[in-house]
Image (tube, rainbow, N blue to C red):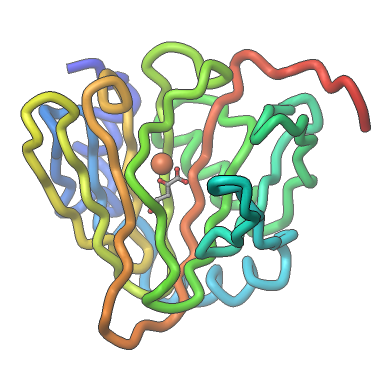
Length: 216
Ligand SMILES: O=C(O)CCC(=O)C(=O)O
Ligand SMILES: [Fe+2]
């Protein structure tokens, strides 16, 4: 199992790893109570104010439509990446983002250089099936994903066998995706018909091959 010694040590010794569970052929580790309910509730409030949220538009058959959630991209200034033909320079780290960065770096033994935030305002906000396999992330990327606020279903689907797995992402939970997860599985955050409060998800990433911005 391609998981760092540091992470194995953390799971053995730190109470925050209580209830840790593996999914997807051991390429995903779920820690349901990485942060306490109170810590997670405070983060949810602070992140709403601190991050630079916007609702991106995408083109579907030539028609511009808003994606069903708010997004924000923060990180080291050189962690530029390309999205829908745009070169994006991240917004600076905020106090809460830095505090979580220290924790996810410590657990994994890695140095994340950027974070994508997704704010699902209610049950109708969602994310479709995809893999985080952009070239900028390099081969077998490690992604640390923290959830605060409303519990939502996180679905995974094997690309060839179609096998499905579902994880309930509780407030304060952490998942670490690594190894061949993005190669072999897709994931999504489906809509829910039930009334739902807001949820913020942070995916800490390592941009290994930043794009050189052509324009500011
Ligand atoms: O909201 C989530 O838990 C999933 C987010 C995600 O898949 C992504 O940012 O790539
Ligand atoms: Fe993703």
